[in-house]
Length: 351
Image 1 (cartoon, helix red, strand yellow):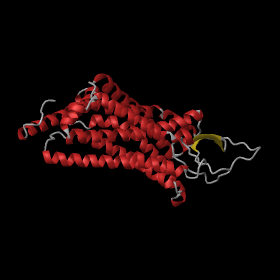
Image 2 (cartoon, helix red, strand yellow):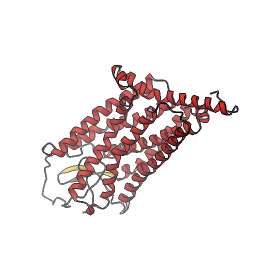
Image 3 (cartoon, rainbow, N blue to C red):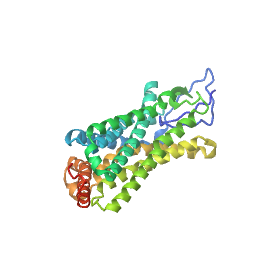
Image 4 (tube, rainbow, N blue to C red):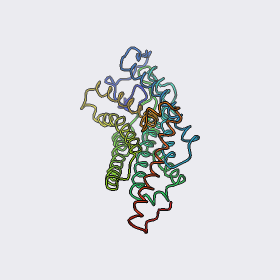
């Protein structure tokens, strides 16, 4: 039998069965789901359901508010796209939850490929949007006049479209390698890397570099520049926009790092205990999914005056949390321009 690698819960990782054997002819196997008899499986199931409920509802609110209740700005364009990415991911979680309970994939080959593709589309689009927001912040601080005159919703939408196109391209390996097969009496959705001996390593490393390492290096550089510039000019009274963005980046880092670590460890499965590796992969994937409902929560709870906002409606809190980002940028830019004009009369203060 080829060295197929199977996974239990339609999460995009692999592991090889210790007893890699196929059913002999004339023998039949009846699979009995054991999830509710295992503490780990029950915990992951509860977490997945909570992620689905909170993420689906929370991101739907963000989409409704930023898309229909707020003035269209560059910042709301960023956050709307981020919410759409998380919303789509959460909308497909019921397939994985069902598979987790049944311990069998019953949705066919197309959805096997598509649900995995959506997972990585969410990962890549989220980190690319965080990179875009960081670069946008950096430009707004370094060149406020240029940014105020050039930052438009139309250009922001074009950048978002480019980010999504790149994310779709990087998510395409799931379309190629995800497969469905019957094994020991059950149908499973798994990664079939037997096409090429280096396929698994290439996919894992490319996802780690393009979806984690390189984006975070760019974000760190942008934030370093922003901090140095703001300390030099002392022009930022409100740190809220940067706290919100920092929280979003930190949440992505914490949620996705364990997943990438165990996926890389999986490239050499004999270097780690089999049970530890499997547990780490399952927990890492669930933690990665957690990021999809954290973003809308951060929009609300990272507000400057939480007690005051808590008394207002949910819609007002979320709209204010995202809208203040744009107002603060405008205020900081105006303050910077006013200071610049007192030193150099050639600096344009008309925006």
